[in-house]
Length: 180
Image (cartoon, rainbow, N blue to C red; front, side):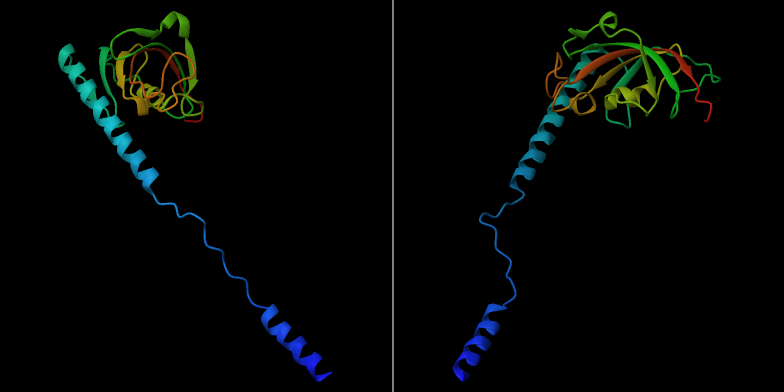
């Protein structure tokens, strides 16, 4: 009986060992992320250089946006009583989309007149930020690098991945949100 008790105690002591964490089979590093960051930096630098060269060739004084795109007013409204849209305002506008070579991707006729609830609906980043700069009756031409346009994925139709865009936008009306 003594031997059985000794064996039972030994089994309990060695059998109730706390579990140890298993080590991963392969150790991943941040090399993929680092490579992706470098690839994006090069892409952005190349696009910026191309856009800056395009602006020099056109001899138009573009305005550099704080949001990472460039624009100029085709038609600027100087009246101070007109407001730019704010959160929830309904913006009625028309626009076209071109690549940096000037070839039309989507015409105004294809896109048709759009209505957008400011910051409440999906819209590509550059256009959303660009509309915030505009008043009723203004027409602005924007140069959007790909990360401000449709980015890595494109629009799954005519706009490919990493495609910078030129958009000419006209704001027809801005209906102020009643809660603003």
